[in-house]
Length: 205
Image (cartoon, rainbow, N blue to C red; front, side):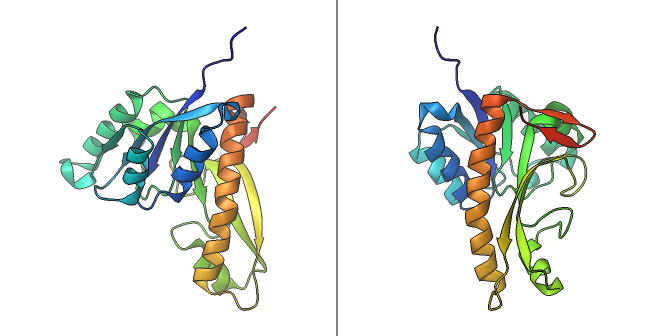
């Protein structure tokens, strides 16, 4: 009996691609059960695309400003992702909110990671907002994306203690480390073991 083909991951990036690199490294082991088949970006000239190129992974770029409307951009992004027949689509620092067409196509398999313990501190300044509030524990959340901002069903969370001398920068860096580990672990578990979503609760057998 032959091993099943690895699950197909399409990863979306907007910046340095450190989460992408973690997935590429993990997928180099056949036992991981997945491979990155394409990397999409919302801008040219970013390190994430360079990482994909070095790994021999096909890339595509869909800039919002290249399309007449946001809906046109969403349709193009949806089509480009669909070309690669993904089992999971992963937002790895992708800084654009997708639209209705994308969520209709991939909403139950579009994964994002956020640098706070949702539902606390959604948006783009999770660590800063957590520090300002005075919490003692911060962290990262992995979730399936829905039409809201950081409101989708939660797959996993990891906690990161807040230290007395933390700055936004130091806390952010420690959260990033925990975030990468969680992303790699749970993407692997999702593709190897499957999942169900019932009443917002994500279960992995």
